[in-house]
Image (cartoon, rainbow, N blue to C red; front, side, top):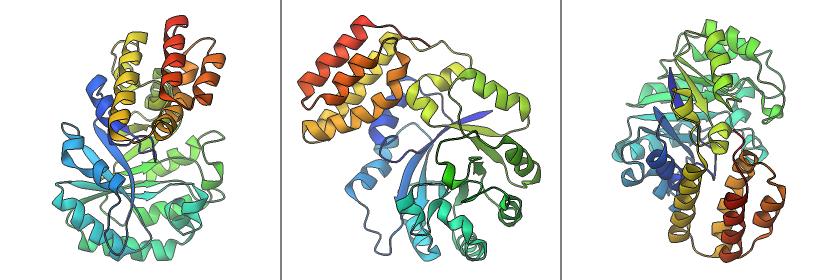
Length: 312
């Protein structure tokens, strides 16, 4: 079964992906956090760096596109084709209120007729493989079987299903009953996404859905960057490996991002996920969170690695 890295806005960027690939690899696809498709096609500096082939060398990278306008999606696909990408992913799953209120991400799911016209146009006019990442709906999952009938009309590379609704965000338990129904209905290959934090989580999904094509991991990998390797039967994460991984991410950010504040913002996001790997982590994470200078941050991280062990 294939394993994919989920796209998490602001976190799984080119810096994180390159270091993850160098230190652990293990993923069949690395999904790039969404690009906002715009009429003028002006990519931000962040988006350009995320897309540059040299920043994704050696990995199968898939850019994700966020939009509700077919013409903007098509123009963005043309640009991405020039970069050499063979596949793009449509974001129909982002639960963020700033995205949903604009009718994008999971917000598009409430307008199935408009969504069908959108999909009609992009599949007719794009000469590239298109996959779709979706949630079950906005408020509840009762309408998802009808959405599945819509999805089945199009030749998707694959359908990635996160079995939560928008209002769940990342809370509550994934709706595996609705996922099972959708998986049985789908005429496209299906990937499961949601709450795979350890090898046992992956095994439970595989045992329940043995014919599944792929699984996607996001927050689980942010917590344990060796998760894909462990799922494939490799060794568990060691503290030395985590230190090397951390240091490469940190020093790459120091080289790429200006100012201590901006570097530390990125690293604190990572520690939100990695912190629970350590026993007795609270006082060290508090120091990390309060640090405003890199030298203070480095001292707090050194203390944590020196004094505490992993509790995998």
